[in-house]
Image 1 (tube, one colour):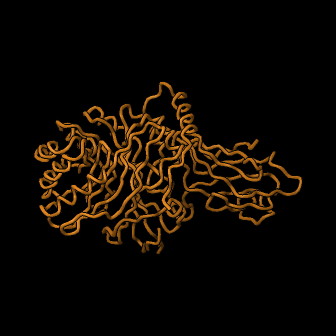
Image 2 (cartoon, rainbow, N blue to C red):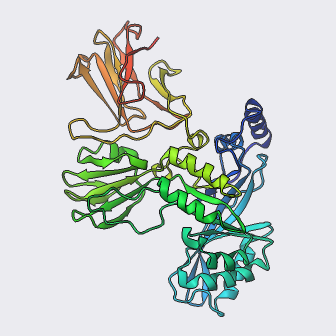
Image 3 (cartoon, rainbow, N blue to C red):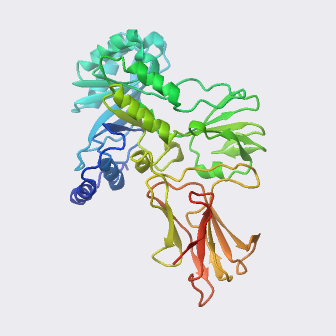
Amino acid sequence: MKPRFAHNAVRLRQILITVVVSSAIATSSFGFDTRYWVWQRDEPLDERELAELAVQHVDTIYWQIGELENVRETWRWKARFNFPASNASGLRFVPVVRLVSHEKEPFSDASNPTLVAQLKAASGKQHELQLDYDAPDRLVGDYAAVLKRIHESVPKLTITALPHWSRSDYLQILTASVDELLPMLYDYEAEPVLKDHAPLPLIAPEKVSKLIGDWSKCAGAWRAGFPTFARLSVYDANEKLRGQIRNWNWDELSFNRNLITASGGQWGSFILRAARSTSIANTPIGPNEEVIVREVDRAVLRDAIAAAARAGAQSAVIFRLPDSSASSGWSLHQLGHLEGRSRLILKKSDSAEAFELSNLGDGDLEPRFAANAAEGGGYNLEIENPAPIFREAQPGDFVRVSAYAGNKPAALPFATRLQFKFAQLRAGEKLTTGLIQLAPGADFRQARYRILNGEGGPSWKSLE
């Protein structure tokens, strides 16, 4: 059964009004119109997402409704996604269709009628439609021609654009066919052979500045597309690209002792080298092979958005609206506060038999990778008591829990310190331990906690 839009409109309106009033004179951290793409998603936006978008003053979401594939002389749906119904949030949703073709002539006289008909039916009563197609250079002219035909049945037509379509000859034919272009201003090049230099970041200051400068010459309306996702690539021992890894998580990278940080940190790019055979998301990694981790540097993203505003872009559009997956990158809240940093607080849960580690800051606590096999990656939450009062401890949301007496591993009930491991913690989220059972008559009045490797240093804090 497909998910249904089951929000309570009255309750949602009250939440949104409260959020907006509490930030009555707040403006987007970007300083001008900001929008998001939603990709390959069936579920509607939840209340928390809607509230965060309201704080960021987002009024438009580009929502992928499917993927059309060209097979010989026809276009057919390869994937379809639910399109949001109208809601009380005031958001405007624009349907987006991804076009894919491996044919030599996808826009032929025979295939174009089926493409136009499919898109006309898909857009329905929507005023605007957006197309996403990575046209090779030889097909840009054919693409522009079919866009004109599509525009005859769609009141407003926009398209995503490759970075180099800022060339005057491309702009001349494309701006005559559509209402707006949305260039994707990030790394669209083939993965480089590493050979003693760092991987190309998703966005680097000098390169993105040049791309924005090129698009500033566009006479038509354009919106600047920027990334927020994270990407994993694998290189073999000869530093040749093997491919991308999908469906991975930060735990696999942070706590894999076979992967050691070889270099990185600049502009969000890291090289993790395999000391021994291992795997990530069921992808085998051999000795001396490398996993390239590329995140979006928050400062670079902030500066690029500001530069796009100065260059005449109608808005910034972020790809994509973050979800719970590691590959979606920074949290939605972090994107509204690109200068924000994490603030971690530990408190007892309502049951008083577990603890909650919450990130109350505006920024995400970012993943941390192993500098060497002995140290390991990630973060450690430690809870210590002078006397061995612990009788049971479950990891809960944490990766694992270990017990120590002083600095030496110990078994319960002889331990005086519990250590809970975690890889990262997004803004506004929390991790809850499992059951922590104490000796009869014991309590946490003398206990203290600290977070190793985290912001603020390893200082002990009181639990009370």
